Length: 72
Image (cartoon, rainbow, N blue to C red; front, side, top):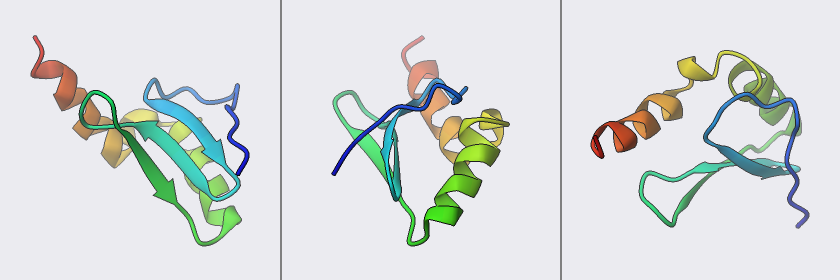
């Protein structure tokens, strides 16, 4: 499975993606969250809406911010 990174992504928690998955930073050090989509169009819609657009509205963004707030 080929992984690649998108230059158009704005979200700081984005790591990479495959044809049907988006890989984001995990909730703890050393892990990654995989968002798997049954349809490539749904993945493209999600990526455009959250990863490349209003990433602060993404449900994962709020959870991942809490990880860093706990470190302060």
